Each structure stands twice: as C-alpha cells, then as structure tokens.
Length: 209
Image 1 (cartoon, rainbow, N blue to C red):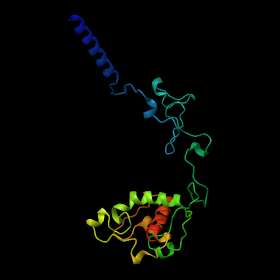
Image 2: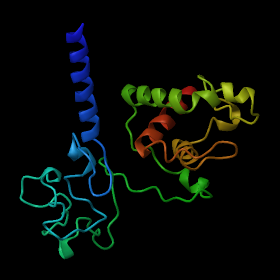
Image 3: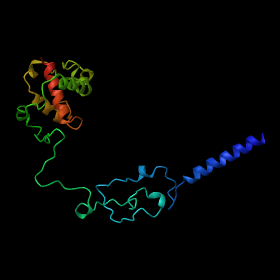
C-alpha cells in the first residue's frame, strides 16, 4: 500500500512541476513547446524590425538558423528593407487565369450584358457550374431554377430563372448580377471568384433550355 502511495505522490509532484514550468508572469513567459507557432519565421510584410539581434534575449526564443534574432524581419534585398513591394506604376493585378479585376459598376447592367463568357462550352465547365449553383443558388432559386427554393417559402420575389422574362438574358448579365446582386438577391462577388461566377452563368443558361 505504501508503494502505491509513494508512486502517487511522485506522479503528483511530476504533474505539479510540469504545470509550474508552463506558468507565465512578468518577464518569464513560460515554456513554449512550439515557438514557431507563436513567432513567425517568414518575413512579415507590414512590420520592419531591422535589429538583427531582436529576440535573442532568450536562447529558447531563437528558432532561426541564419544567426538572426527571432523578431528580425527586414528584407535587405528590397528598398528601405521593406518586404512588401509597391506594384509598378500603371499596372493592374490579374489572377492565374489572366482575368482583370471586375470594375463595371452595379448600375451598368446593360453594358455588362454585352460581355462574353471566357470559359469554353463543355461538359466540365457546366458540371462545375452546377456544383457551385447547388451550393450558392439552389436554396433560393431551386434546383431547376424555377424560384422555388426553401428561401422562397419565406421571402417572395425570388427570380424564376426559367421564366419568359429571363430567357434572353446573357451570361454577362448573370455574371454581373451574381457579382453585385439585384433586388432581394445579395452580392456574391466576395464569395465566388470570377471563374466560378462564369461557370454558374454557363450552367444557368442550360437550365433555360
């Protein structure tokens, strides 16, 4: 019985000692088991610490192998030691597919309707569009686009995409409305990439056939 008590006592001391070593207070921030999770090794674009010894006060803090302190994050290869670079003058960002930012205003639907869908007419694009439609559109417009989704049971005015009023809308029109929203429909430009919006537009036109 005394052996069990001794084992329990020793185990208890070990647990208390382990917890005590993790305690933080004042200048002692405790034990960090994975310092790289707390202190980023890569360059930080929005902060510039040029002191190469910053973060070397405690050896356990320094997880770098380049001889610099944990907090040093300037980039000596760029002007002023900055990591974030200003884009060249008169340039615009493009995504991996070469798409330019969509800057047609919300009130320019007539002009947007003249845009051509850059994606090809093939089964793969339509299939992707259907998947995205089911995820972002079906709850309002319904699986067949007839405006009979679950949301329409609570809110009137959901568009029947297969109705006569929508038969002749273009894929550019659909893309623009997805981007900016219209009527009760909210904007989805922040939830869907341009390519995804074009895919949905392609699929919606198949519902209208």
